Image 1 (tube, rainbow, N blue to C red):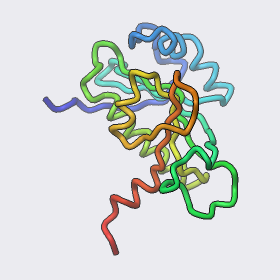
Image 2 (cartoon, helix red, strand yellow):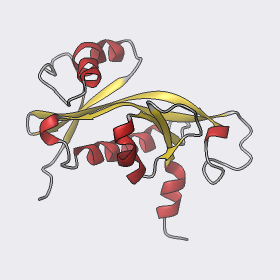
Image 3 (cartoon, rainbow, N blue to C red):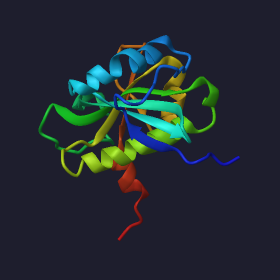
Amino acid sequence: MPLPEIRFLPLSRDLDVSTFSCGHDDLDEFLIEDSMDYQRERLSVTRLAYIDSEIVGFFTLVTDCIDVKQVDPEDGRRGYPYRKYPAIKVARLATSKKHQGNGIGSRMLHEILTLTIMISEYVGCRIITVDAKPESVGFYERFGFKRVKSRRSDPIPMYMDYYRALEEERPPG
């Protein structure tokens, strides 16, 4: 069954997010209690995913960096002279309980990639990072995210060199 059209709107004070529930108290609490303050203070930006007038998900983005040594040698840029790559971090991503398993998360990741490509035309960033909950690692791996070389196990730091992925998709010439 095809997914209905999803609209993405920036979080704003006039939007009611109080009934959103994804089944993770920390994610629900962030959206309902903290996201507007963080956005107002320029600490993060949250976008809401809608089907018709219903909030079906949200994601929050922040700037980040990742140590060159944490990225696989086939990713990144050979001979890059700095210690860290600039990145965009998926700080939060959640789908409402009612809509989990329906492709909403995939559509939000596609929107994140689109926004990151647009941002990278103004500010250098080549990597997308996320600290994945253990139960979400498979979801991110399906989109080409890799585990960072790290000892941490919860959350699990992951990254995607989206520039490399785009280059591999482009036809030669």
